[in-house]
Image (cartoon, rainbow, N blue to C red; front, side, top):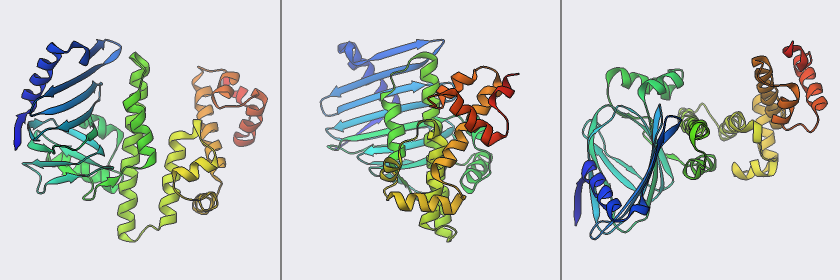
Length: 332
């Protein structure tokens, strides 16, 4: 048996469940923090549905877990205009939108990006399975500011935005990588509140978007024959370094993250970019230090501590060697 629900009816059921079980809902809101909403519903014939929702200035996040007694067809009357990042952590999801030429079936450990424009349709959640996903919706203007049409993937999104036509960024769903898993875990377990929550969540959303788009670009290159496995590995590692250079793990952990050995990891990166992994990370840290000092908000000692130097003079020597002048010159 398949039960048919609308999104508004499901929310009513959750509110009704809250009336009987007040400990299952949490709402927080202030001028300095995001709206955070956690709701769950347990009903005969329906099963368990648990939802965590956050609304930020430029994006929303919704984490949903279900274990159902029957199949549910959940109708969406008008999915808002925006760019939607979807990560299926367990289970599977079937989706049909009226303005998309094909159905979408996403399985466990898959992700994709979907542009919608007041799109109607429905999702089917299967009974029995433990379903868990993370859905992030970016406003159209926010995405445009972040991602100009400088790559094949972003150019396609901008073209469809101009035409107001929904689309999937990639015809093939991507695989959720270990880096994505770590970022998703950060989103799901974030304990920050107020301004720190805003900074943390936005950083994780941008990290996930970068990882998604980068994976799709590399896969397209591979399909065209423009990329080889070593080039893809080097490019993925470069992106990882650009995201994590302030808190970089050792070479053994990096090799584990990228499912390869230390020798290959170091070799392909040097062949691709002409310098070692940690030399590249050091350059990123020093460039970051330059920005901090030039802004005038930090002292040399504070920046040295931020970059993990045990002594400020070690940082000064590295800075002078890279830029040709000491960091104190920026403080004058």
